Length: 283
Image (cartoon, rainbow, N blue to C red; front, side):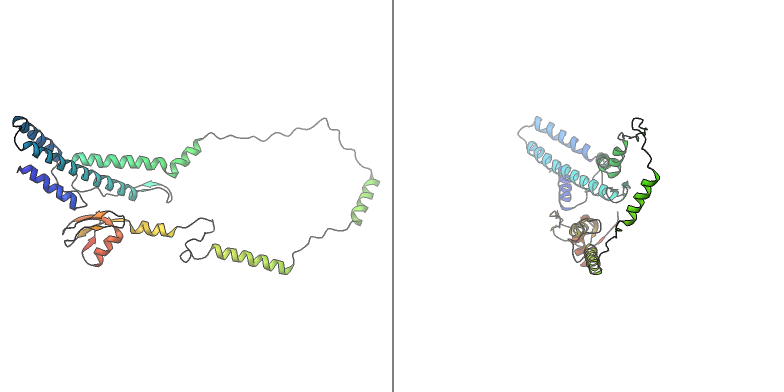
């Protein structure tokens, strides 16, 4: 068979078996187009040859390679933007982690950074900082206090005589004094004990009761935090040949070959680490 067709089959196998991009030449896509054009010319010149069948098979293989590489690049961009852009943990900030996928062609590199820019703009539009800035720009209505005016239509009050004032003072002095009723000691103890019980219920250990509320009555979902930590993706260097596995995120990973660099959930990677089948690497 054609030499370039065999090369396409090898790249297809690598893209299927590895989570990382297979190594290709920088002009890989140009060579595909040149190869297809040559097969089309041969098929036109000799309609009864096997060139037409070879052309269809090459188109299927090349399409699968491109789609698998696009998916890997897209997933890498999404994972990297999640690690680099903080949305709701404090002040939103963007600090791109240098984890650009390996073996990118110039066309794929342009595609990768365009995805990063799109995701960055999207997260900027939905961040709390952006929304708070929009609210502050709204026009505020300033209400001025009304100026007090003197009512000239109401006549001044008549002053009372000294005898009337003295009589009023006598009535006030003879009136029964108002004594503020103090709570009984036992009632005060019951009220204090109720407040203490409520305070202990609010401040109980969240690890023992995940459905508890904090002082601000906010719900803590510890199970979601645990699942998010276990499904965190890590990069691992494989030591031995291992078959395909199903990750905790229900995705198929592998089969694995020695010296493969793969990305998979942390909880699955720990099994490799424990059995000395791989180790985590920082890219």
